[in-house]
Image (cartoon, rainbow, N blue to C red):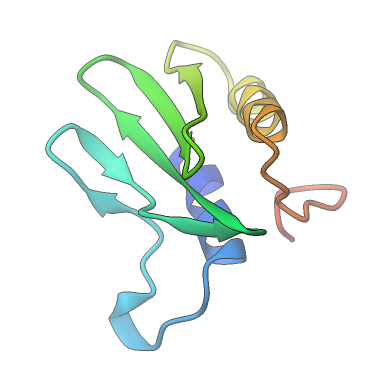
Length: 101
């Protein structure tokens, strides 16, 4: 239930691509990734690493944020994910309510 939160980040910030290429998450050998997402003058990517139960947010300027994938509710995950993005200087354009809506 956490993947739609990360997927909406990509859909809200990445340029639109027609047809099937506008996919929110892609599989990797370790889990799922957003692939690079533009953010101001840099980019970032969000990676679910299921083998080590960690979500990584990596920016093109070398900064990394980490969110532990541990048992908890969606609201707790969402709050930590948003705080991680903020700490890395990633602006999501979030308004009140569910992300990017």
